[in-house]
Image 1 (cartoon, helix red, strand yellow):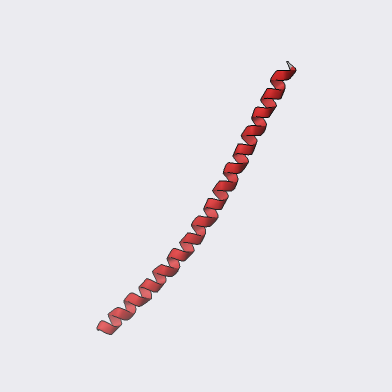
Image 2 (cartoon, one colour):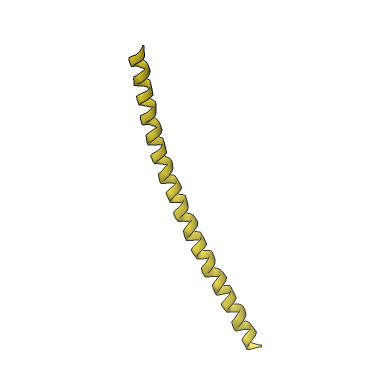
Length: 59
C-alpha cells in the first residue's frame, strides 16, 4: 500500500515537472512575440510621428 502510494506520488511529481517545463516554453514563446510586437509598435509610432512632422514643415 505504501509503496503503491509512493510510486503514484513519484509519477505525479514527474508529470507535473514535465508540465511545468512545457508551460515555461510556451510562456517564453509568448513573451518573445509580445516583445516583437512592442518593438514593431514603437517603430510604427515613431514613423507616424516623423510623417506628421514632415507634413507640418511642408505647410
